[in-house]
Image 1 (cartoon, one colour):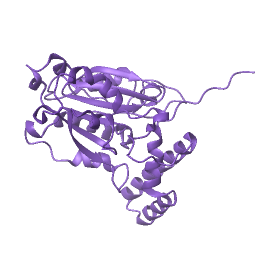
Image 2 (cartoon, one colour; image 1 turned 60 degrees about the vertical axis):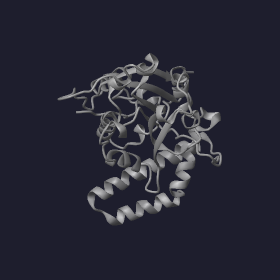
Image 3 (cartoon, rainbow, N blue to C red; image 1 turned 180 degrees about the vertical axis):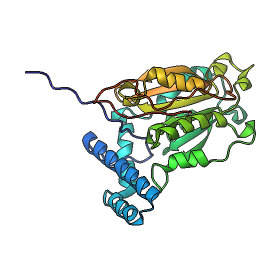
Image 4 (tube, rainbow, N blue to C red; image 1 turned 90 degrees about the vertical axis):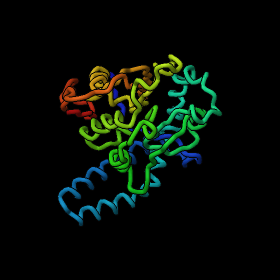
Length: 290
């Protein structure tokens, strides 16, 4: 008897843990609730675009019947419990601790500025390290789509003092609903980071790691997508002036640290939605830049 084909892993994943522990949910229940929520949010955006107020109201009622944002957040948080991988920023600190160990934590003037998009916790590894002054953009009552809106509509820094040494997009990019929006989010990160030349004269290891972007995605976004793989993601990031410093892949997640290596000016390479890995069992995650 032929062995059954294994189904590909879902794109669903959680967010960083909050201080309190959410009620435990099974992996299958977590996956089903998140997928249902995302489907309803997609239908809601379509209804809004069509101006169908009755349909919008009906969909909002369905979302509330599922428990609203509170239940959705609890489901999302399960992926980041200690028994399911834990705080993703621990990986970042494993990468950065060697270059930060010579910087005195008590010296507030030498702390690095971090922008943490999609933050739900002040108790993660980065927060506890003492090496960062952190500005957080939190999930709020309007749902997961607001993460993109808050970051995309945030006023641009006026000078270097308002820019950041590092940006964290941990399990955020995959929540942006459209491929073009994901590309624009990545492009916008470069406008919030300090210039690459700022770290000349600092510890060489600091200069080798900053300014940087910490990016975490569900592993299937790059391992099982029709439109994105490691090579294409690296090409997209290089077109934005990033170079890959470190990466790590687990069963469920893929982690990257990208250093902003140069300031890109003028026309950049275009990356349309293009099938690069066909197959009926693939997912449709894509990043469009152009």
